[in-house]
Image (cartoon, rainbow, N blue to C red; front, top):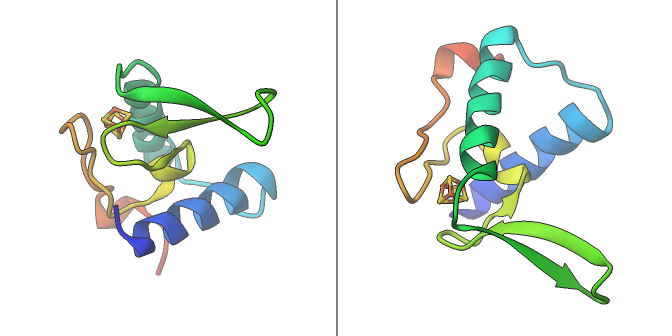
Length: 94
Ligand code: SF4
């Protein structure tokens, strides 16, 4: 996990899913969906809570990244080799 991965993952996650300012190409969405499905089914994904037990988030127990922001970091690799970097030709960032 690098600072660049954290920054890129959160920015892409916010622009795509929260603010709806970025729309992934079908190829990129398919890649992100595959990453999502792998993480969602992975035994290393753990639920965490903060401030109070009512506030939940998920974290990878292998790399410490926050889910789902981490699946939007295009250069990131799964530490358990379940998924790889997003190919440059489908990222849509020039
Ligand atoms: S990044 Fe890899 S090891 Fe971590 S939760 Fe996702 S699939 Fe599992």
